[in-house]
Image (tube, rainbow, N blue to C red; front, side, top):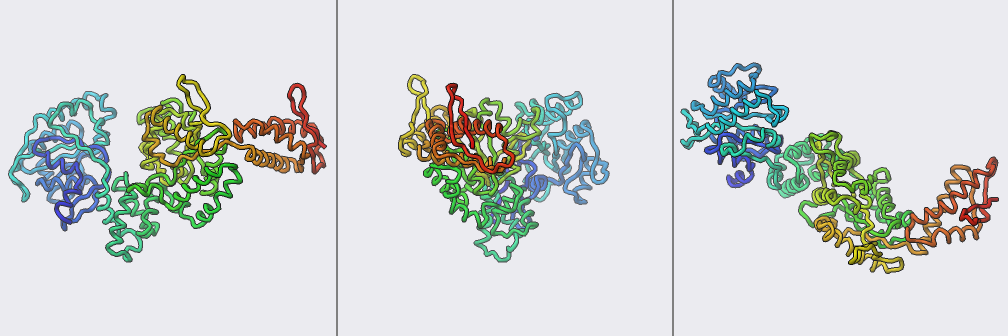
Length: 621
């Protein structure tokens, strides 16, 4: 690997550290600090190593002879644990090591900092590890803690660059600071006043690795995958690219863990996507790659028709999107599409036409189990503060350790259909949470745990576009029963676009949903008759199961009952079910309750009566 390539892949915070050592005495190193980082080997190649080793590699290039590492539990220890470095550090700082470390109080650490910054005999540095855990609360310090940080702040200002008396082979004979480095989860874990207006304290952000860094790291993990001996140079490079693409947004340590899992599970290098999935969701077996799934999808339209009737256009488009998901082509036009949800569906249309039922049916179709369906009623999230239920409360707030309802559910069922019912009723700020899911396929809850949505189907349902507001702000019907499907689809999609673009001022949400809006049509009378027949058949089956009775209806009673149930289709199939319950199931329950059913095998409804008080009764034989 060339020198230029090595420099480009060196972490940015390391390059900044080396550049600023002549003018900065202390560094706050915060962010992705527990990750691995690329560091050069003696042969010039790069390998992923922990932060301390990467830091030491950089300090060696600045002629550091040793590094002192302090943490609140282990005390102080020299690094590296080699005789020459340990002996030099012990002599210069009069260390009393026990099992390689020396217990130390904050007062003793403060004194050591002062000696270190003035040390000329050999260039060295101090790393304060787990600095986020030095005190309970950075803005509620006791007297001893306040004195310690005040001394550290004063030292940062008063320290001067020094030249080592015995410069190493890399020395350029220029003065540099012997730096103090604070290793933190967040910069806020130090007192807020510590680095305020202090030009000698530099904050270094440790970010997640970019694509090129992950690709370089992936090459070093190739040998842990099975059948590696079969791969040629081109396949090795493809493996590195695929591994880097599949781990977008993850730290390098995730690549290491994924490779370790692949080694234990016997995963071949060609199946690197399966190894990443195993790391993310904790399951090696992928329902999306089952051979029987393509056969199920091939007959999906007929299967769906048994549960969702009269929505041929919506079903056709849903199945098309499902086929794309099964073939792994969702987001294929984007470089990072592999992390997005398997499928996104936005079901829009009148109430009671089968939107929620289609989501359940798709769950049964893909996963063979309707229990893999996770539903959130978004009317429960109408207030902004309720968003904490989805992701969990922020750290420090009551209940944050419980995590979020959404993130917990997806971690428990990574292969699932996630339904957000009546999404327009949620608070607009909560809708922003979907941006990251739709783009990156992941969410992090209040505990810091990440849930991955890359193996889910997301379904949003909405009644947007059926009613709109006129110029006076009155609610009017935008589409009517009897309108052609093309008219309904055009007007509903237009109203949805207006809602996200102008009402919410969030066109980016609509942009991420894309062309996955599936519009349902109104229930027509012929479809209503089929829905009625299916519901009535369910009633007959329930009576058979509960009472071992065959329930029959006279043709005239059936026709009268159907006319009563489908005369008003404004509430769709749900309205048909409500009418059936009112004019048939309730009277049937009363009639059966009054009958002596002992020994009977059949019962027949021969008449449907309605009193002047609009009370319906049945006559049975």
